[in-house]
Image 1 (cartoon, rainbow, N blue to C red):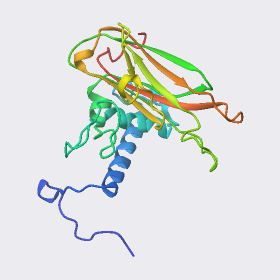
Image 2 (image 1 turned 45 degrees about the vertical axis):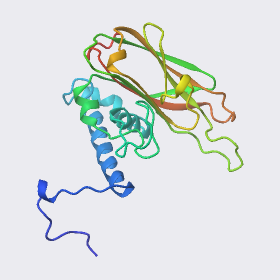
Image 3 (image 1 turned 90 degrees about the vertical axis):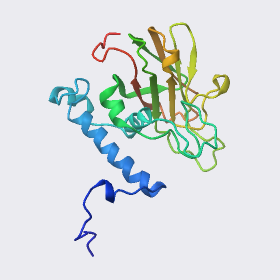
Length: 238
């Protein structure tokens, strides 16, 4: 049979409805993911104008990259105010928060590492210069896909990649915001949010580290990074 509705309701404020659960969030996230993919494959990054030359670097986007964009755009929240949430990490009810790709792609300066590879027990360092202290927070998200584990494995992840951000004064921010800068060991997405009140103008470092891999057949892990913050949108040198 056909799923077509022969008498659809008009799309107005009066016909909008609110619901919750994965049946609602999944199609919404899928739609956002399609828009994110179109933004990059049509060459809107970094000039916000469609450019076929700029699109060439984004014809094979990974799911990790799209996840990193969605998570970096999300605002943390808890509707019932009954659980404690950190500004950076997820909570059990609302995850990393409510995605808002308009903020991430259009309104806040954006930098991306679409796909990079890290080997066992390596460290990658990315410099980032913040030019302004204008009330904008710094948001950094790293995402990767973990290889499947044996059913006999006693570990949760094959590869534990960690995100750290170091400010010009040496202040350390660790992915997902655990107390005492404890590293995340159970998640393939890590986010750091530096509040606007803690922004320092100057040179930051974004650091990705990997643990020792236990399988010699897997040489490296692919990951993606997405950054939004108070820097010059088109200054790619710093």
